[in-house]
Length: 199
Image (cartoon, rainbow, N blue to C red; front, side):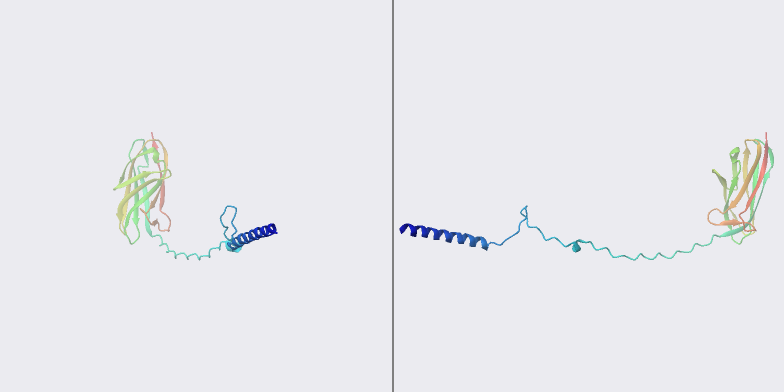
C-alpha cells in the first residue's frame, strides 16, 4: 500500500511539472523565422511593384522665327580691258577694271573674283590700296575704295607673264561682304577677255 502511494505521489508531481512546462511554452509569442533567422518581410503584390509610367509632358512650342532681311543689291556697270593685249614674257600687263555706281548709296569697297591662268603670272600690285588672294578656283582681288552714287572708279592689277600662250580670264564683281552687285539687267556683273603672250 505504501509503494502505491509513493508511486502515485511521484507521478502526480511529474504530471504537474509537465503541465507547467507546456503552459510556459504556450505563453510565448509565436514567430515565423526564416532559415537565416531574420523575419521575412511581407512581399508586395505584383500590382504594387509595377512602376507608374511618367506623365507625358507637352513640348514647348518653338519661338517664332525672325524673318531674314532681303539681301541688299546695288546697281552697277562693270567693264575692263587689258593693256596691252599682246606682250612678251616678262613685260608689264595692266588689267584695268572699271566699276560705276548706279545706285543711290555709296559703295564701300568691292571684290573681284577672277578665273584664269594666274599661276603663270607674277602679280606685282593691286591699286589703289588693294590686295589679292590666290585660291584653288579663283584669284580674289579686293579694294576698300569708296564709289559714291553716279561715280566710276578703276581697279588696276599689275602683273608680269612667265609663260607664253593665249591666256583667257574672267572677272566677276561682288560686294565686299554682305550684299550683291547687279548690272542693268539684274544679273551678276561678269566680264572676260584674253591676252596673247609671246616669247
